[in-house]
Structures are given as structure tokens and as C-alpha cells.
Amino acid sequence: MDNSALSLWSVPVVSALIGYVTNYVAVRMLFRPHRPRRFLGMTIQGLVPRRQREIANSLGTMIERDLFSHEDIQAALASAETTQEAAAFVSEQVDLFASRIGSQNPMVGMFLQGALLEQVKGMLTEQMREKFPQLVERVVERAEHKLDVSAIVSSKVEKFDLSKLEALIYEVSSRELKTIEILGGVLGFFVGVAQVGLLLVLR
Image 1 (cartoon, rainbow, N blue to C red):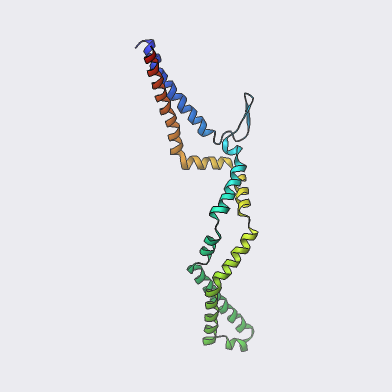
Image 2 (image 1 turned 135 degrees about the vertical axis):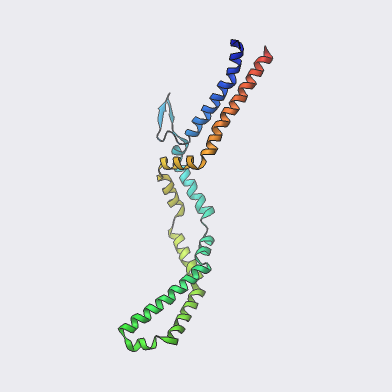
């Protein structure tokens, strides 16, 4: 193989290498460098570190607007299972109250037992089952007025350790990120082949 043919074959190889390295650097620059660095008169910093505050604010707003639903929270808290647990809790508290009253005042305790005690428990637990959804709605409404979900999420994301976030994303998306790097090499190779073909046509 003469030098001319070797030079032509080297074009796709070099193009593939350039494409791979370019995508490799681009992927790493999502996070690196964490802090601003001066290079050739330019300030270089990873995309996520540079935009962390904006990302945090946007994420907080999105979660509060689209994901943190008053109806979803209320439905979860007022489910049949939760209502049943609340009624059981009331029943337990009535038993404890009757036991405490009986130990402190045996005369009164004589009346808070047997059928009367079961009747009181039944009334209170039924009332709890009926009114529990309203209680949940009132609690959720008051909590929402005092709870700034957007600010909490924004603050948490803004303070999140970048090294941990970087490691998490690379761990979850390592296959996809590696595919992006390889595709850079593949596309670079075909660009190189096209350049060689163009050179041969123009000769």
C-alpha cells in the first residue's frame, strides 16, 4: 500500500477518532469542571454546575405545578386502609381512656365497660370513618398554605452534591452515554469515508 492510499485510509480513522473524542468530551462537560476554569480567555464550566440554580428552580416549579397534586395527596391519605387505621386508633384510645378512668375512679369505670363501652366505641369509630376524609382535606389544605413545595425542592436540588449527582446519572445512563460516544466515532468514520470519496471523484 503506497503512501497515497494510506493517507486516504487514515482520513476515516482520524475522523472516527475525532468524533468519538468530541462526544466523549461533550458528555463529560455536562458536569465537568464543577467550578469555573479559565482557558484561552474563556470561562469553562460544566452545564449542570453552571445552570444548577436555574435547574433547581425549574424543577421545583414543575413538581409543585404538575406533580404535587392536592387531590392525589388527599386521595392517598383518605384511602380505605387509612380510614380503617384511623378508626382502629380511635377504638384503641377509647379502651385506654376507659381503663385509665376505671383505675382512677372505679365508680365511673363501672359504667364504661361491657355493652356501653362497645356502643361508645362503635359510635366514635363510625363517626371517624364518616368524617375522616373531611379531616384529611382540612389538614392538606392548611399544610399546602404553609408548605412551599417549589422552594423546598429548589433548595434541595441547588444544594445537592454534584459529585453524587454525576455518579448517579452515569450509573443509571452509562449505556446510553457510551452509545452517544460510540455514535460520534461511527458518524465521524462515515464523514471521513465521504471525504475520501469526494477526494477520489475530484482527482
